[in-house]
Image: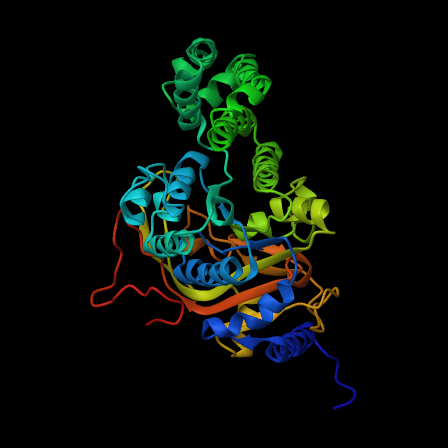
Amino acid sequence: MPWMRHTDDDRDDHARRELSAGLRKLAKRLDSPDDLDPLIHKIGDARFVLLGEASHGTSEFYTWRAELSKRLIADHGFTFIAVEGDWPDCYRVNRYARGLPDSGTSAHDVLHAFERWPTWMWANREIVDLVEWMREHNRGRAPEAQAGFYGLDVYSLWDSMHVVMEYLQRIDPKLAADARRAYNCFEPYAEDAQEYARATALVPTSCEDEAVAVLRELRTNAARFAEDGREGYFNAEQNALVARNAELYYRTMVRGGPDSWNVRDHHMVETLQRLVQHHGPQTRAIVWEHNTHIGDARFTDMARAGMVNVGQLVRQAHERDGVCLIGFGSHRGTVIAADEWGAPMGRMHVPPAREGSFEDAMHDADIGDSLLLFDGSNDGGVPGFDRPLGHRAIGVVYDPRHERWGNYVPTIVPRRYDAMLYIDESRAVDPLHMPVHVDGEVPETYPSGV
């Protein structure tokens, strides 16, 4: 009746139907690698392609990123993949992927050596397949034409110090002795970063000056050391940089607030910049990280909390070079995660997405696995899509029972990303250290199965 008053529920239902219809019109089905063609066309000449994930333990996020990365490397000249992983571990993968001497006999063995929790992030069968493909792709190519695999993260404080010491011991024993004395500042903490962080909170002391001094000495001797091999020096310098920034990260982490997050993401961007400079002016980079790192923080509630992230910083620094941010999401399924930090991994069920979330809207649109390409406008070409929606974010620690209260980041999706891959029902990644299969289930090696 014309005199009846519309309720808030009526308006919400109308907005939901309008959003679902708009998403249904925008979405493109995602069934095979050929369905990535529109996304590759959108990427065009962009030098930076950042690929997200809504969890660290979902197979489809890995396999679709791998398919897209292989296309970009083989057909469009992309130079390397840089991931949310530790530099020393990933550099060993890089050496294997390039077929360097004494780099290992299989990707499985190299990745199985990943020991820092959470091991499943990179020690999984999906990454084994990608790294073996990279090794075959690189076979017979000149070093400058090979694709690399690197870690951007800041956690490897002690591992990185060990690499620096091994390098200096071989190339300059006197400087190695000086570095050993400097790094001895960390010795009382028994290679426990948390213990170091707690200690710096209790007393006004740190090993900052010592970590900075080693990096400074390496850089002072850069010209001389580079004569022994440009790649060897670059690896040593990067590990010294990790040690310096890791010291800062752990020291700020214990105080809480956004500072440690910002230290970490600034470090990852600094490492990315160094990789681009190292590989030369024609470098094109692929980055794999969680959505919370690659989706522009300015279009989430992270900005109000004083946090920046990799996607935002790369967009701001390289707008002229071309940057494409690609998010991932799923409605329900399974995931590898843990109940608490450092706990054993487990295969957990991911319940249907929270009502009113982006993932819920995609499921309501009933389009299945799909690709969304946004047109750069505030609503991405979908009326009503320019307002914040909950967007699921699952970390390495996850409790499905908290779906109603947590695990969602308020997000203006078409501003946070340039494109989005959506999986309606996803499955857990397949870890090397703990095969996690349902009885009778065979691990898939390809997004749609083979």
